[in-house]
Length: 245
Image 1 (cartoon, rainbow, N blue to C red):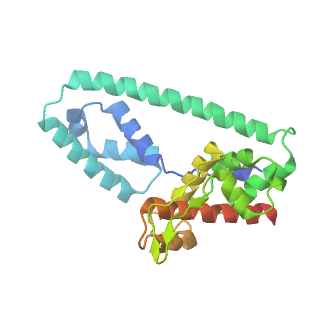
Image 2 (tube, rainbow, N blue to C red):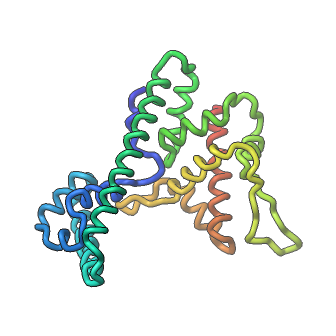
Image 3 (cartoon, rainbow, N blue to C red):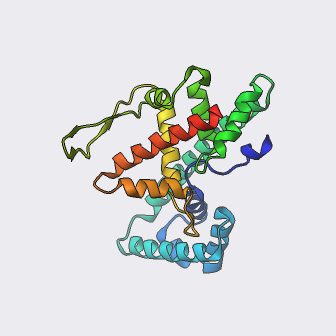
């Protein structure tokens, strides 16, 4: 059970954002960043991002370039420092609330109030590359009783990603729209999963090679949004098959 609570895949990589907040907590003006020893900034980047030295060095170079540009236009250091401090406090406050909500979700799922089948289905959905803990919980919560869905197209319609195709003869429109009926929160989670599925890792390896290739093929003659909807449609078929079998 505990392994899927510790899965870091939520759909996005926020380590870079945490690193910038960590930097700004120590150095709140462009000049202070420029004056700081390189090894001190690299240490903060390593500890906050947990990434390798290459990433940290590249990030440091970008940070120095931005700080140099900002220093050259003489931004008010005092006003900038106050705004940054307030924004950091707001971000950390939101992060604390998010952590509390996540812990509460985990406590509920650990309890005996949640059916074993629901817990097992979370693990099943997380076996699909690109699906993280929060996405899996959201999808299952929005679906409710899966037994009410007999065919994949019923689940597609429920999520509101069934397309309205405009075709005439050999003409195929690249402006196909989805119905956007059904579960709004489930559709947002599905959108996040679709984005995560077509990403590549730092090593260049695809998160989900099959879906990435499918996405690229759909880009031929179609817009990115239409190709992404095709990925969402494909994911629902995966979800249906996994939960059914």
